[in-house]
Image (cartoon, rainbow, N blue to C red; front, top):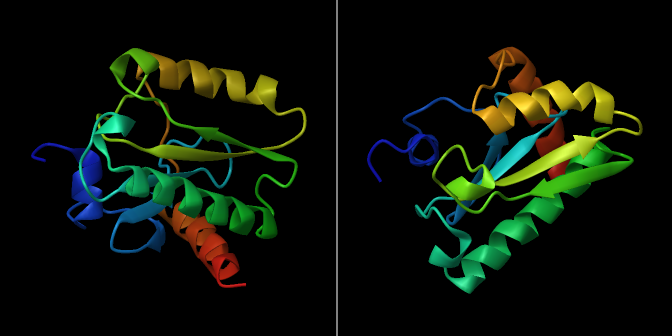
Length: 148
């Protein structure tokens, strides 16, 4: 799909900090994370709404998401909990028109700290980017735990 940031990431036309990749999907660090270790899982096939994807691809995205959450926890991210978030369409605050599953590690009592970031995301203003160095380090740590 032309002019789709996530298609460009999947095709390696845009830089990202990759956590996981297979023939159907790619997972990478969110550059504007809502929590430390925040990962996005996207299908390589473009789709805006979840129901545009075949059911096996929908299931695959969530299966990979579940494996990544396990690796995030082993790496120390989201040990107490995780938000699985999928905004299905623009009316649901989907800011990039490409299906993506957010895996947002949470810490006990982090809600007040997260409110400003959530407010920025909802408005489409994302704040400061996390450095590529930090994202690459987090991606590497999560990737290492995917293997265990």
